[in-house]
Length: 352
Image (cartoon, rainbow, N blue to C red; front, side, top):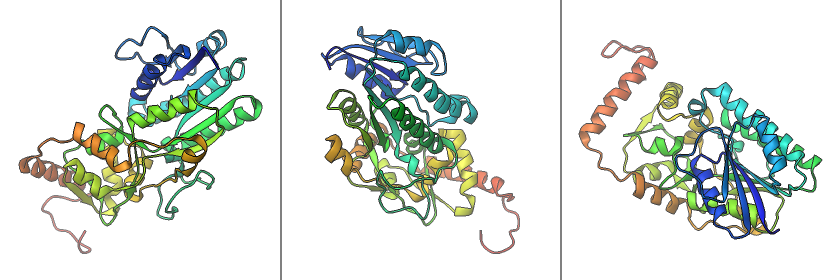
């Protein structure tokens, strides 16, 4: 297809801005419609038309119908409840916003591709999980939060494809993104002075470098049309203990019964959702064979190298013993309060 016209949702966020800029540089792309309900921090290139609207707005339908869009890249699913204004607002924007977008796409006569940026969080994180997830395995673990939203969004996209079989639908389940400019709950976790961990657990993690995120989205939008669902992650795995060492931060082991209390502190500090806390306890690894063999995509950055680049550019700061002692003292005091303890008071029932 020549003279491509592409609509990108979530365009004002970091991934959206990088993708829109990359699309604007492609000679075959005639125009990009960048959609978001928030203003971008800097103006987009001249080839880009910014539409300041919520996905739930009727203005989106008019824009899709009038712009002659042939490709829609949906990045507008959020994982941060506090930034969205609360969990109910986040769910409404994620799920209802996707429904509105798909309703507009259904009436777009020129539409031929739909690319959904999904997440490996659809698999959840639980003690009975398989060692490696494939795209065809059933995954009903997430019952709340971002993981549940992502499952519902994928279901709506597949339903759309049954009604518009002329549209190639590509669902990309991305591992957790890291990189020099990425700002998300996981990167903010590693930016803490100390990294809380669950005592006795050392989960396996996968990462995807921000450069590879843009590369795979460009491949899905502009490369040969490929229908299907694909896990995308850097090769290899990183243990949480290894990641914390690479980050140069001291760990703070938390007894499992107190994880809920610490999770609440994390939610207020780094905007963690419940399934992200489970991820840091049980981990998650997804098989990426289908992306290599069917989509023709192989990340340039392995999971260890992606995290090392993130750490080198963002985390290599000297943490003094005084800072560690202060944070440890404050964290232990918060845990005592959360558990109903009184500092220095008697404890019963054995060691806690």
